[in-house]
Image (cartoon, rainbow, N blue to C red; front, side):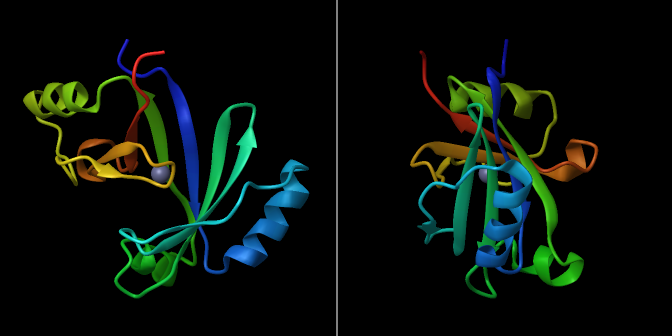
Length: 136
Ligand code: ZN
C-alpha cells in the first residue's frame, strides 16, 4: 500500500489567531505550539484530531506559496497530506505514471519531515502532499 494514513488536512487562513479561536470552538481541543516555517513563509497551528492533524496555515509574506490563495479566495481547504514510508519511491513511481510534481526534490515541512507536493493538474484539482514518516 502506498499511503499509510492521512497525515494532515491543511486549511489556509488570513489570520491565524482568529482561525485558532474558531477551530478551538469547532473541535473542542487546544492546538499545539504555533510554528514558523521559514522556507514556506507561513505560520502553522496544528490540532491533533485522533492522530490526524488539522493544520491552519497563515502566509507571513507576499511571496509565500499560499499568499495568492488566501488573497484571492479568502482562504479555505488547501491540501490533504498522506503519510508514506519512502518519499523517493512515491516520487519516482508517480512520475513514471505521468503525474506532475510541484517539487520533485523533497523539502522539510512543519513537522521537520521530508515532504513533496503533486500538482493539482494531475490530481483532479486537489493539492496533495506526501509526508515521509519512515518505517514503523
Ligand atoms: Zn501540509
